[in-house]
Amino acid sequence: MKELKLPANNLADKVKLLIGLKLAVKEKIEVEKCTRESIAGVAIESSGFRYYPKKDSVAPLIGKTNIKNIGVFGIESEYDQYLAGFDGIKRLADNKNGSNIYFDAELIKEFKEGADLNLTIDSDIQFHVYNAIKEQAEFHEADSAAAIVLSPNGEILALTNYPSTDPNNHQNYSADDYRNRVFSDKTEPGSTMKPFTMLLALDKGVITATEDELIDVTSRVGNILPDKKYTEMTIQKILEKSHNLGTVMVAENIENEEFYNTWKMLGFGSSLGLMPGTENPGVLRHYSNWGLADKRSLSFGHGPMNTNLAQLARAYLVFANEGAIPSLKLFKNNSAPDNLVQVFSPESTKRIAEILDSVASDDGSGYRAAIDGYSVAGKTGTAEMVVDGKYSKDGAKRTYFIGFSPAENPKYIMAVRLDYPKKCFVWWDPTMRNRCEGSNSASIAFQKAMKRILINDPDIKSKLEG
Image (cartoon, rainbow, N blue to C red; front, side, top):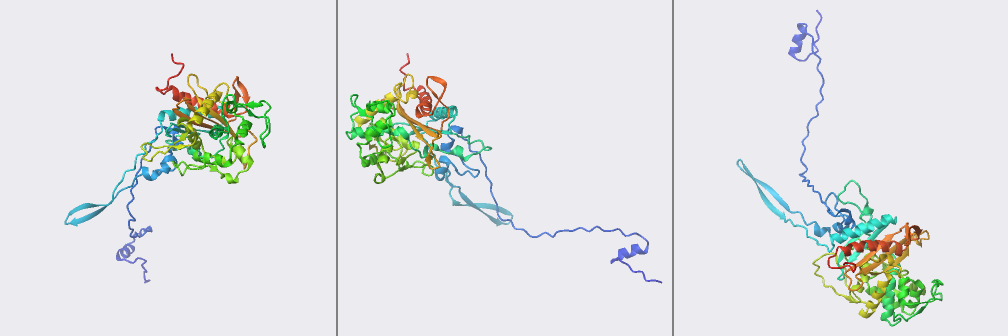
């Protein structure tokens, strides 16, 4: 008898083979052996939605927060440490006594709410100004626009930028839409500086600014050529027509140091201190480094200086404060003392303000800033943009109008700038194209914005009423 070799290893399998039963084939199953894991910790996730009711009219000023509720633009970023507050911390410890378990909370760090920041911004004025510059930037096909409105005491009533965006829309995002051009863009202010040249000259006795005083404008001064249109001009006519050579003829009798010290007192080249992380304070080069061309170009807003729009608007506060200038204010209940700096004499300031009233009339370059029924004073400005280190000769310009209303005892001071407007027209034919200047672009934006402010102010009555 042959020996039967059993492949099975257990008694049951041996029995099945002996009695003729077929063995079932077993499936192989791979089992991973579990390893001990430890919990790294407990994470608490919080979520919330920050809503901005004024939307695109205030986005570049207010800014926004990111997904972690940290400010990333505007006031949200600049003052995040005050707005955010501090989270509190408690430690929970369990104490076991038999079957009872309870938690004893221990305060590690106390919770602190963020501070409230109350802005000086008037939401109605902000709305009117934003819509006006947006409308005019689109009409004139400008790359961008900016405006700021001040009260006589330096409070910022409106600060608007275009393009902008709705900060509640999280689908579309562009950092450029949050750019605060009023503070961040340093530019040459052009002819908007001419009133200060005349103020300084009047205070120094260089001119009288009377109706019988005539300035010869027939001779070339440096690179400034006569236009062969005028031979003699009054100071009023020089400002009305924004005449470069007439301004330079006056500036020739003012010392470099006097220019520099006055421009410094007006705040040019120094930070306003409101939004340090955003503001570009511009440059005012020291007079010891000036040449003759620098002083001449400085007199009409070029040369050894550039500035931002907020600084430029602040300088015009002298016309609302009898020649003195206050600091700007963005927050209410500011406990810091307000020290007025007397820059010009009240008499000189009043005289130049009267002349600026005529600039915004049919006789002046700012004729399109005039508002029926209301008195407006101000000055146009145009400056070629610097592209690749050189002044653009392809029409790239910044246009300005800085003005105030009423012309006597102003309540509102506004500065408007359009960047590279490309579609402008002559006043007598709305279909006839013309090169873009402050007179036919920024002046219109100013007029649209200021008119909406004035007609909605119950304390200012139109001369046309009744």
